Image (cartoon, rainbow, N blue to C red; front, side):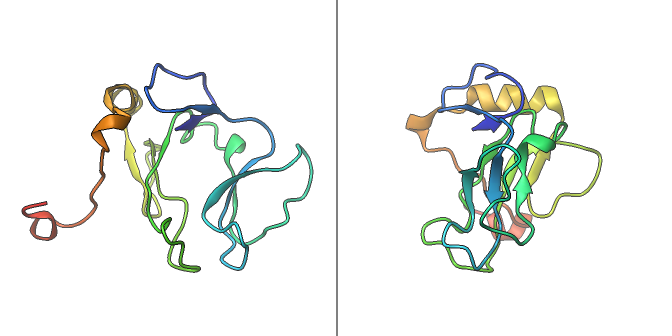
Length: 128
């Protein structure tokens, strides 16, 4: 879990974002679909649509990574899938919640329970 704001009391490891914290979305990069820190103000060694996480001051006040395309990582299959704050606009595959509900959920999650987020239609998720 990550965020621009201080840890809201989550049970997972939490990283407070700082200048230079990125999500590598360059499908040609060896660190594709992962968190990376580069020196503040330095140009990252990856390109593409990589996200400067510390600049997303609304959506990323608090967020959790959805483990999509991570084990194994398949270049070009998709990256940066997060559970984050609703900004009033559509997401690009993420799950967003109003701020209060998001923090409540993040505090409720427990690592030992191996929580899962399933995305799909009602019929696709039947019996999940």
